[in-house]
Length: 131
Image (cartoon, rainbow, N blue to C red; front, side, top):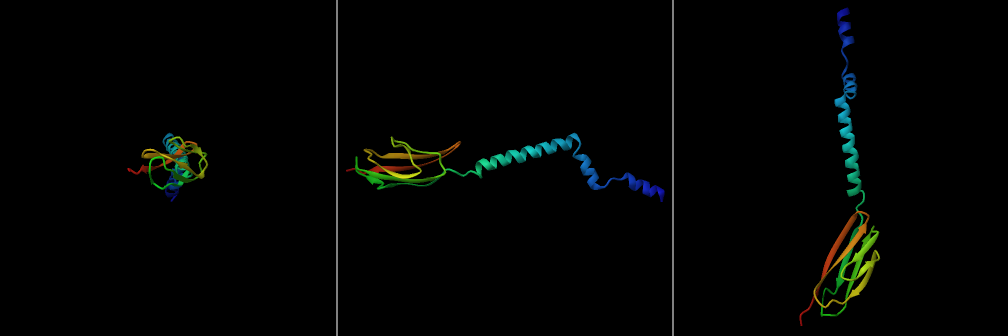
């Protein structure tokens, strides 16, 4: 009977073995890798999923087909951008707005919404009606 009690005293339960494993160099290395993965993945997730901005809600032209030099109205709506630009000489614009353009040839306009390191862009084309 004394032998059985001595054997049981020498045996460690499962949880005691687990506690001692995490104190070994291998266990510490695993903890560090897990921590790096969690922090790295968390930062990536915050950058990608936590900050979906800026969002371009709309970017339209009316009319889309015009005669050379005739006005077309560009309108747009952007959320969460620090800066919004339209190329082809339009320049920096507000988050929501409209402007007139008078292209003489088929022209593609690009609206770019900028917020820190995250940029979004959308293009539209105004076509010139051949007479």
